[in-house]
Amino acid sequence: MPKPPLTQVPLNRLAVLGAIIGILTGLFIAALNWSVLGVERLVYGTDHLHNANPAASVSPLRQAITLVVLGVLTSWAWYIVHRYGRREVSVVGAMRGEKVPIPETIASAFLQVTTVAAGAPVGQENAPRIAGSLVGERFSRWLELDIDAKRILVAAAAGAGLGASFHLPLAGVLFALEVLLVEMSTRTVVITIITTSTAVATTGLFVPTPDVFSTVPLTESPWMYVAAIIAGIVAGLCGHWFSQAANKAALAAPKQGRKILWQLPLGFLLIAVIAYFVPGAVANARWTSDTVLADGLTLQALLLLGVLRLVVLLLAFRVGTVGGTLIPAFALGAMIGAIVGTLLEPLLGVPPAAFALLGAAAFLSTTMAAPLFGMIAAVEFTDMEPQGYLPVFLAVASAVLTVRVWAVITDREQRTFPVTYASWTGELR
Image (tube, rainbow, N blue to C red; front, top):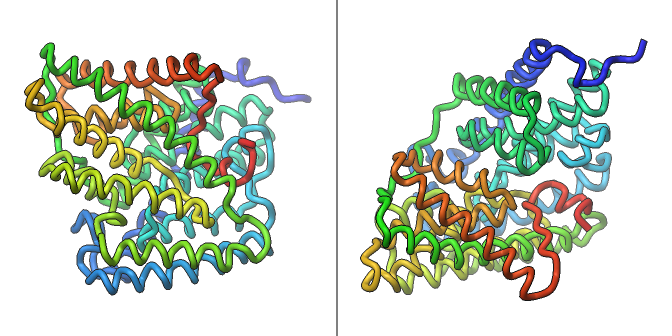
């Protein structure tokens, strides 16, 4: 007898499936997060739970040498995965019903997070997404669920993985709904909420919850609204351009053959040189974000670090490093906002830290092509007070509208995709 479509399955049964997938995903993410802590302690003698920037515990020369060695080791690791493993499947492919290979996906996920933990200047959120998609796809295949059920459960599991890795439950839900499913029905909302909440709770049982970024007080004043609009326009458009550049770099990266064996080490050699002279350029993006929000940086430091962080991130993608952009994008947006705020503080009286937070939310929203996700991620990252919601919402709305105006001015459709595994598998070509 053929199985009924998802719309005919009782909601309580779907809730059970979502909870089971959430628990399994949470366990997977806990293992990934512990591997991050282990590598950080092995390489730097500390971890990001005790030191926001573990690389700062070693000398610039030691960090540069670490990056050179990392480039050589990861080039061979990715070469082996690509040469002898089956073709990788992204979350997008899993949602379409493609079979996700277990050993290759597990190897890819752990390779991504450990590379970032050792010092690669990219984000690590891609790994928990594909980890969740592996759990969701395999569980759905084992139960022989129809393609509609699989699509929703895989997306929910991917969002749950993201939420569990960074302890962003609501942002994880919105990523699944806004970016992957692109729909909000009663069933999709319920399934994603249950899956994400159980995953976040499960991971939290085994891994300490990371500290949020410093809270920046935002007010509902007219000048704050003006600052939100300005920050949204500037950072939002920059985030859109950054997303396009990052995807192009990932698509151009070596994926098959021996090119990665020389391109990735060469790229990391260049990154190591930059790190030796300007360690902050490859510092942990969490530390960069928190420093901009809490302590502030001079205009010269913001410009230098912003440009260099952009260069090393795009270079890492181009030479074959697989990763994400979540925390790096938040950091870049914060620096852009702080630059604008430093210039306009004498005129508006709004502190640069407020501009930084508004810029981070706007930049993240257009980089991820997900306004709701960007807003809520900024709220959850900083444990924001309710009076700050409205300025952030206004900044994100300004960012999205600016990208749309840019599309009209350039007379072309501005298709934007977040940097996901599909960027490396070629599904966005």
